[in-house]
Length: 308
Image 1: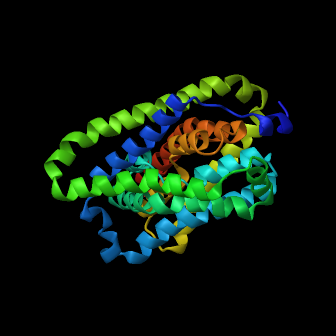
Image 2: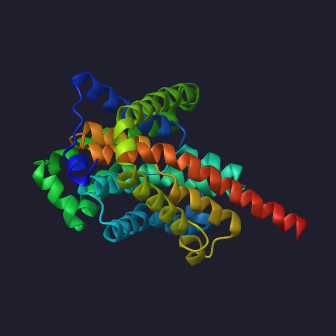
């Protein structure tokens, strides 16, 4: 598999599949909003610098680092586009679990996930176009496929913002109903997204095997750069965060909602195969890399206990 073949690969979805993927986005954003509470944004009052700085690291810092990684690696344009789409997506609940497992600051992690989810409804589609336009190969790729940028922003914002606003309304005025339906809806959305990723990996398996260097190397380096940006050597240190909060930032910046990225690429971005392959590979890879980070942090804790 060479770079030219990868760039020309596209995935065509029938209308039913497109509707299913759009529905998955809507259900997922609605379920996220049902769980949002004012307490999740308490860091705005108690430590505004840490809260806003953490969001900036994820929403602005990570896409900027992504462009830098693309400039260094010079991947095929579709691969670079996949990296940009992943970086522009918000984090997910997986980062909260990994923060908890690594003994990080779970409350801070949940606050950043809530904040990025709310902002992403308006920011993600704009960020995808903004950062893609700043990297000439991806800008040229979108021009080559006659991509309708205005329609993309309008449609994606509507799919993200409308269910988010609806879910926050239900959570505010009908909290009992929100609590009852939140988990079933979240599981349904997660099931669809898991199916999308697993099905994508299976569909892409021959491509992943044939073009592993074009796909796995950028994914691994991109993910490692994201972890480094959030960890003590990056944003966490600059923000003066404590050790537990630096661990939270590590996962909030390093674990992205790759499922949403796959859905956006398939449903809204012409099904570009190389980009979708990157997002699908990210969705699997970050579980292994995140698990390795958890093991590393737990190792550090054990060493501190034995060598105080």
